[in-house]
Each structure stands twice: as C-alpha cells, then as structure tokens.
Image (cartoon, rainbow, N blue to C red; front, top):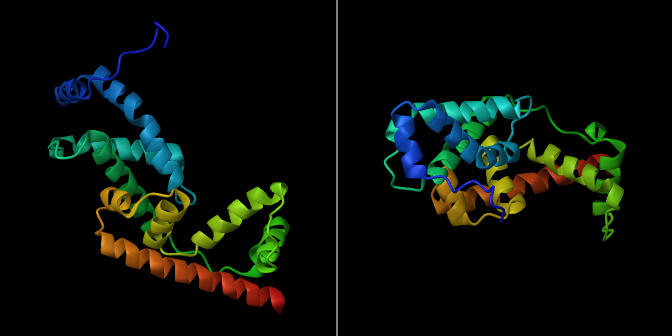
Length: 198
C-alpha cells in the first residue's frame, strides 16, 4: 500500500459531522458510498432512467432520512436498502412493455435462442452480448418485484437471507416470488419457441 493511501473513513464521526450540517463531511460520505450505490443502481436500472439521476435520488433520500437512522444495522446496509427500494419504486412506476414476440428479437438474439432451443451446448462468444440482451428482454416482461428477485437470486447469486435484508421481504415470500417468476420466464420462453416454429 502506498504512503499516499487515504485513511479509512471514520463513518460514525462523518455521520455526526453530517448531522451538524458539515458540507465537507457530506461530500466524504457520498464519495465513500458512491461505489455501493452505483453498483445497486446499475444492477436494477429501470428503462429510460439515467443512472446518475437515480443515484442522486438515492443520496437525496439518504440525507433527508438521516434522522431516521438509529444504528440498528450497519449504515451501508441501510443505504443499500434505500437504493434497492428507490429502484423498485421506479420499476413499479413504469408501464409494462407490450407483449414480447419473436419478431422483436434482433438477428443475433434469434440465433442465440435458436441455439438454446436446439440444445447446442455452446453459444458462440460473439453472441454473448445477444444472449445478455435476450435475458434482459425476457426479464423486462416480468413485474418489477419478480424482475428484482430473479436478478438478485439468479444473476447476482445472492442468498435468500441477503435478499431479505436488501428488500425487507420475508424469506418465504422471496422463495414463492422466485418460483412464480421462473415459471413466468419459462412460459415466455415457450411462447417464443411456438412463434419460431410457426
């Protein structure tokens, strides 16, 4: 580690200075939490919403609710929950996209889906981006809460307990929601298969 490395942030001291309206402490706090917040926002970014706008909204909520923070959970965990809830709120506010059809797929996405349906073991490396986009298009057809549980559980590989901590949902609800969301995804995928065959 170099001699120029900044000392770790004294979070408790910083929060106390922020409560006393110290602007430099507020900037330090934002700088410290920015990587955490931007990672959450990017993972759950609703369509047509700027990641910077959403990140700023999370920080505004954090500052306006700071008096509510009692220290029962670590502060970054508390901010993570605000970030996830803000993303969910934006997802809920969006109108659902129209029905997803085979014709909506790009040529690369259609090739990837065709490879999956014909049980080819490997998707060519140049189609990895198409596969990524296809997954996100299918996820976009789900309700916001269903999208979130699939992203956290299957794409980000978070545990049920971690998801409960981030969302405030109980573990049984998460399991049921994940089961139903996976069934909906399977049904969407089967509908695309039928369209391709016809």
